[in-house]
Length: 326
Image (cartoon, rainbow, N blue to C red; front, side, top):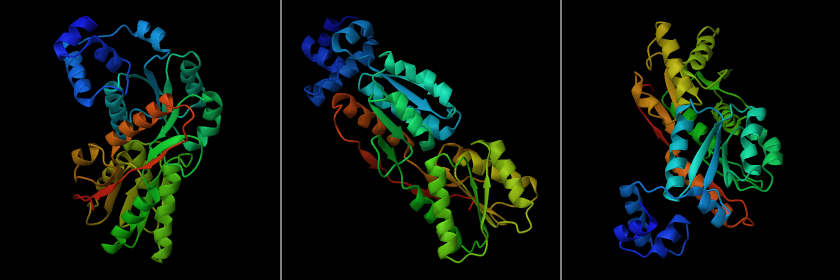
């Protein structure tokens, strides 16, 4: 299928098709949709090498995630891919594991002009090293919000979300609320713990307990919950910083012969599909994962088109979805 046939199929000029393929902002929205529909219908594949030579762009985005096995990361990447493809881009996925050497290997794609920009979901503690390697290349940090800095970012207010959860549990009569957290090199982990501790302090709750999971997995959540259950004072509620950790906590509670939520309420974080798949279904803070991914692409494309533009910070809405676990 040639560009001429795409133009005929869409009922537009060849020049209009070319502008759509080159992501020009001069195309009317109606014409853009007609061209994209024709491309999708015909399964048209443009000559990417010729396009790169003509535009000095690769139309590829590097997406670096810390753990693609995390359902939340996977949902964000889905949103990134959808928005990238809508704008004529493809993504290259690097599962860095927050390992700086693996990140270094992936970032060689920037210096080789194989990608036009990068979206990261790595820990903020790694940013100074990443910044040195990335240099002036277009860059967006996704799912970790920063109040300042030179890198555009998109995320939620983690402190407010954590405060809301702990206050909600306390209002329901829970007096011994524990936290299952993760790696404090991640800013979200530090902020959610800050929110948890602030409510414990302001409510003058006598109980405070934090266990740190070794990774964001069901097994690690189960292991952390087992430590909480064997302590001298057992919690009557557990707030976990991810749905996977919360699922593990539910498993540990049930294996201990206790009931969720009668004996111990459980609340997770992220709003992944896992929350509805486990039993009892999980009360969780829902993040707009797909929208985060799409917004990150929008920020990155703006930086690609306007290299001298200032960093943008987007804080997105969250909400608590209540289900049977709490």
